[in-house]
Image 1 (cartoon, rainbow, N blue to C red):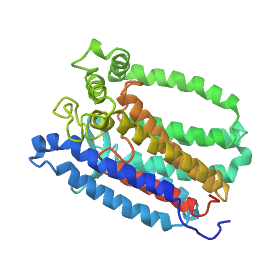
Image 2 (image 1 turned 90 degrees about the horizontal axis):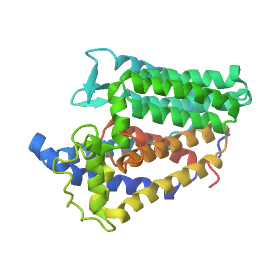
Image 3 (image 1 turned 180 degrees about the horizontal axis):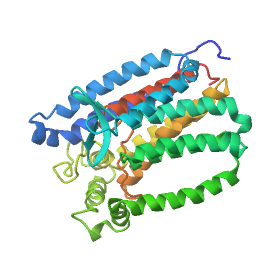
Image 4 (image 1 turned 90 degrees about the vertical axis):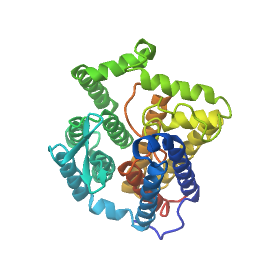
Length: 366
């Protein structure tokens, strides 16, 4: 049962707006060179990011007023709609190809990325399923298996685009939700063995994935090819030192680091704002994670607990993967940094997700 609403979690709200402001500033700082070269307008990416951020904030504030129980009521419809979008994006003439992936559907001058909708749609549905069937989660047949089939069906459709980065975030987030619901470790061990074999198959089935792995292990073996992005990212972060070169003073954004306003925006931030700037951003994500976990633990019912945990896990996993790629800890995956990277669907859906989290905070005992 939902209690009377109170004020949302202001610490969480403050972290979100601070990250968003930093993101808008860094999108401009990292992109104006490319924007002038490609479009003859240094403000091109900034103007679009402000539009996305404005629409996202309005959506977040609206969603924050919607009782979270509404999402439980329409969970099946939302998931069905997300699956329809994933099928549509695979149809030639509807799906748009960018960077070798058919992941976007064009709508006028803009485009949407159905896999971003699926991340949130599946979290909502899985939260509803787990809250209604938690007593069966220890059963492979009644609880664990239906959850896994659903997760990997969505993952399979995303991989047909292909989009390994988004697929990884979706699988890891949903598996964490199943784990905290009380699934048996024995089932996870069996799944891990199958998953490892599947991961090896995915790597071997696409030569570019193999090259990404080898580039990660030794990027200087192919400095002008597969190792180029990682090397240029490290060349950005290294000179940043403690205080950075200063806002707007990045050298790597001058056509060394491709599309620095998207996946590798943290590299430009590290170059311009240094270790201190990077630490502030990571600290804000840790604050978001702490408040999200606290909201989940203090939520009034199981659906709200699973939903809050799913949303905050998705954001934390995506941020962790993106930053790990940028500093060379893991291979390039091609996912954005929440709140900071340039993008429409990603930023808008991220803000809608935290809008749900903020609504749950209004009913939690925090």
